Image 1 (tube, rainbow, N blue to C red):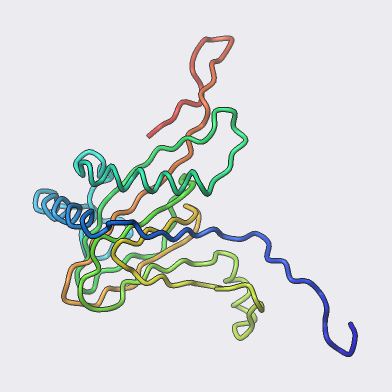
Image 2: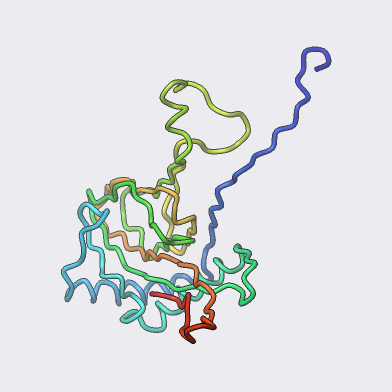
Length: 220
């Protein structure tokens, strides 16, 4: 230290990757997806998982979303592959489960993780009128520090404790499946529509030399 000025070097280790992308020609794609999803809601009661209020489809979105849904999934898998490295001799492989969400005023999602997923993904089809409904990513490392030093933070390392992401039609966000996340209550008169997916890593398939059976086959 010279003249009382620290000269140490800050290195941010153990980074948490979060991918943001906006789809080209999203307006046309979103019109197709909105019609498909709202039609599905008319004939399916929906699930109650982390969501409080609103409607969540079963995790069979690829079965009924047609070419529009297929395009969305391909785009998400392209991002996942671009931002993932592997030492597996067969390269990268993915399986997904996907679902649609329709939220109206007051709907929100409790904090949760997607166990068993390498990436989690959300895509915004329609935002609706009004505010709120931010996607919030929670840093799992910080509660222990905030309990005894609530007024302190690390300098120059970005968001801590939680980071809010404002929804935008056409926006796709990918983040690690182990990262806790929630959705704040939506306050508005319109309808908010999104598609979420788990992107799971496929294990290489190997033949057991003793039995001849296939081991490590992907499971949906």
